[in-house]
Image (tube, rainbow, N blue to C red):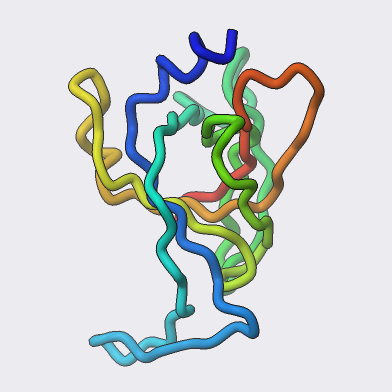
Length: 138
């Protein structure tokens, strides 16, 4: 089952981990942004809602505030191989791993390219075929 799950992971995701202790730099627009260290890219899949909140069969969501803005948490919204490094979870930038979609497969929506997701929870279970991360889109 693990091979089947990974065969559906057609995106390339690049994990970015926060520095310890947290550090920040100023971007070209004068905003303070967290310093993140890019990791080794690996396969992945995005599983997000397709309609309004609470629609039958859709990914469930809760909200967290990032920079004063409520953002939906996509439960199981990002799938990575079980063999990939376990990411850090955090409900604010520079405390959790951020994944960037750096390449899309031939059947993927090209609008996913460049999307960034912050890991807010790393649920675990036995007999896992993939790691299903709770994320917010930044």
